[in-house]
Image (cartoon, rainbow over all chains, first blue to last red; front, top):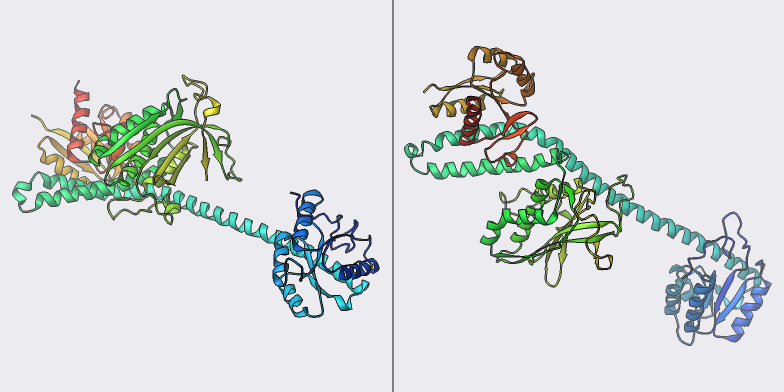
Amino acid sequence: MKPPNDNPSSGSFSLESSRPKVPTRILCVEDNDGDFRLFQLHLGDSPLKPRPSLQRARTLSEAAELISSASDQSGPFDLIVLDLSLPDSAGPATYFRLRNLAPETAIVILSGTTDHELSLEMVQHGAQDYLPKDTLSGDLLGRSLLYALERQRVRMGMKKLNDQLQRTTCELQTTQMHLIQAEKLESLGRLAAGVAHEVKNPLGVLQMGVDYFSNKTATLGGNAELILANMQEAITRADTIIHDMLDFSRSDQLKMNLCNVNELMGSSLRMVHHELLKNKITIIKTLATNLPNVRVDGAKLEQVLINIIMNAAQAMPSGGPLLVSTFSAEFSESSHDEGSRDLERLRSGDEVIVLEVRDHGSGIPEEILPRIFEPFFTTKPTGEGTGLGLAVARRIVELHRGRLQMTNMTSPTGVRARIVLQPDFSLSPQAAPSIPQAEVPTVQFI
Amino acid sequence: MNKKRILIVDDDIPLTQSVKINLEETGDYNVLVENRSANAVATARAFRPDLVLLDYIMPGLDGGDVCTRFRDDPFLRDVPVIMITALLSNGEMGANGSVFRNGHIMVAKPIKLQKLKSCIEEQLAGVAT
């Protein structure tokens, strides 16, 4: 389809010159031969120069065909003159249908003696003007059509600007959200080191206190042992939160090594093997062989994998199958970061290595899905989750210039977590993509 | 058996007190505390410790500075030092409860007495062999 006709030299007008340089293309939708002839005569008398080119439709369906073929061939009509009473449509519906057929074209209503009020109503709904057939003249017609064209041009210009404004506002809101998020993470990082020092010393004192009394439970009697165990648990919990926070402040210190993703997956699964067994989770592995290596901080990546595996296990409280897989794919991104200045970021078409964990739980409620990577956001009861796990996980993956994506899946329901990494061919034993290109799946990021 | 002499250099008074009490309660150590890092070298020279537990972040001279001064001192250069720091987490420690980083043996706060004791013993054994 041709783009909207916004070229000032092709029948529409610029503010500088209100006169068209090429003939205005008019479609007259009028079933009455007499009224059409009269319109033709008045148009001939009008001062419009050069003389407009005129086409006629007797019915709405005929008009639809002409509008459609004109749009395909020479671009939309500049102007439609419409009689509201046609053999296949009558009243306001005629205008609204035509409006939908030609949303960018100026419409002027040809009004009979009995439907002036209706015509006026149509003007309130977006028609550019109405012309009473009984008092029509060349002068009146010429002026009306010129103004109609000009108003439509301005209206379309405004619509275009408004659309642009809405898009920009939307982009601005998204950027602002990212900035707030980044700022939050940055502040958290700065805060972490300070908090770590200030909180860990008191924790150290408490730890020493617990250790001191642990040797004396026999003499303390009562519930001393239970109380000390609870205190120990509280210290460990607080220490874990600080550990997670420190990951923010120091996660730029990555120890990058060439790693095999299957080995990473295997070692992570081994570390949580006992937990999975306890929760009756069955692991179904589909690990691609001969995958290129990745250059990552293995310990950090294991931390991420363990986090998403444990989240997946927790999503299936009655147990069930947990699908883990690794594969090579072609990266595809629906929206890329326009402002990115990172030469090494992932680009559409790049070959990537994917580590996937898929559970068969009930999925993440849609309303909280956008918040799962926010620091301190958790749905777990107090004490059971710090709300930093996924936030840290994503940060770690992003520091590897990779992506972490959590997607709700249907049939069967569940969450699919994917870690997408860049392969490192430099020193890999397999320096070529391991899967024939035709079989390489595409990873779509939304 | 002679008790080993441990010097703790840390500005946190409650922490050093409780570490001292716990270590001394094991019956294996004689512990002295120094809460001002600027006095660390002088105190160590007078005390002649078998091992120093040194905090990393302290006002004035930090653990790194103090350690350098120990290494420059003919009487202290061979004394094993264990850095105790809040900048590392227990999750980052090795199986023996410590990690070797930036040229130092480091342990993370908060440390359990049992782990601290085994780190101390490991370092002392290293000196003895």
